[in-house]
Length: 367
Image (cartoon, rainbow, N blue to C red; front, side, top):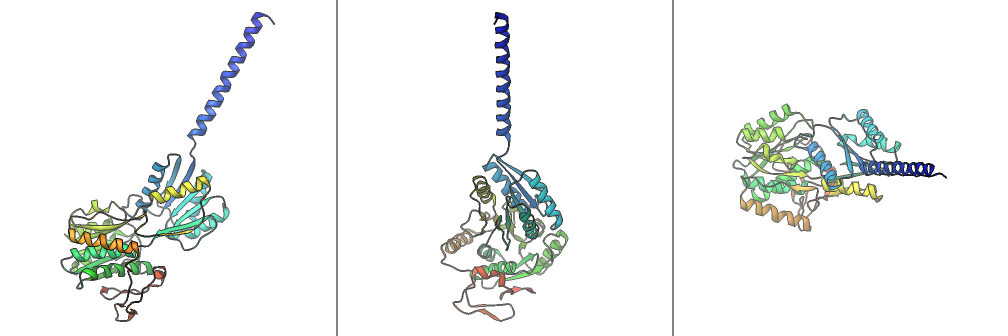
């Protein structure tokens, strides 16, 4: 081979080597930039509601922060039903391997989609049905509502408290009852008045209900709807106290009258779900947290809460965690005078779905 041809051959090999290096480098860079897991999350409302939806959305963002290789596909204001199915299927087409259908009414749509895509994992909040690739999660809240009752019962000046609640379903009735029992444990004269709005989100109805309760002399307002903003702001404008729900940051809407609140902090739980999907250890189960879980949190106390009240709340919290105390322990009568629990009897927390009454001291209709 001539010297010229040898040089040309060597040049060709060098060029080929450089091209191969560039190809490998590009492929490697592309692979490293691909997310390790795509997670889809559906929201029934706005993720700026300072309530149910924002708690889930921020949980997903904490998951993403904890696991930089995770990509989140989030969609707000998704109606329950066929629209939810279409959104979930679109997320799967984009590569999502974990779906969080974050509304109670998404359960059946998620079950239908899960059957079509058995390799995709689904986790649903508060669901009562599962599938091999669909698990459920939530946290039991009556103990937390009992603690809010202690704080409110020690704070009220009129001994009249009120709750604006979406619907008279068993779990909400249990929360109201727990709140009243907690309040009564530190203030035997206290009463709780309840107004049901008939819907999970209607600011107009919520404002009307809140003002009606305040007009009756109520000076503490609590709320069980998707967004607590309207109720706590109404209380603040009328110099009343308020108790939050769902989201940890509600206090900014009622800084002066804030007592405390119950918040769902989903970030670490979502992180665990994502890790399990990535390492192949995820399994369908029904998770029900409590006050010892990292996804049920008592919000910081506001300036209206005395040091004595805060001390009582924290002490009772430890009693619940240790199992020393029970929320529903007899004797308990309903607000029509019927004995529901005899002295010494305990209503099991797993039977909350059967609670169909409001207790003595609560003014309102359960049905």
